[in-house]
Image 1 (tube, one colour):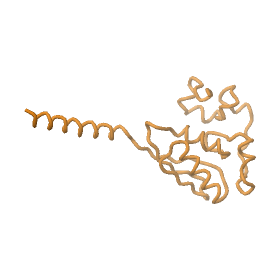
Image 2: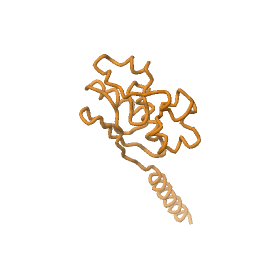
Image 3: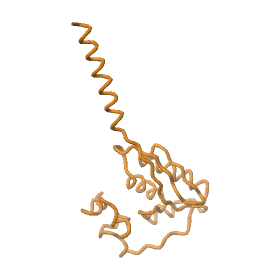
Image 4: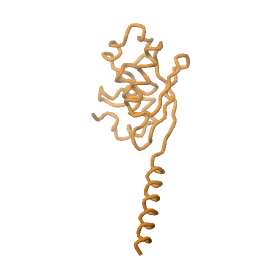
Length: 147
């Protein structure tokens, strides 16, 4: 009987471990990020990892950041927010002027034009454009604008 209990506990442990690993889905995505140089590459990749990416590789020529991340830990929006906080514009978010101005001179790229009326909501912290809000789930209830 004691052996049966040990086998049952072992079987349960194996099942629990396999189930927990199955829940950690990894996703890969490509995000457009503006920048200029090798220093930008380092800063962008570091910011993406700070935003939850497990791997990040920015291509200076194509301006594309390839990221891998655990779906249950972060999202593309969180990764882009961390990059924008570092001063770099992404496909969906525009870095605030203060963060951009803090970039090294060689890292200050030609910025995409933005106006207040392009924002998806009235909150100035939002940073999302109308085009981004059409596809972003968070903007249905303006959750992207909450601090």
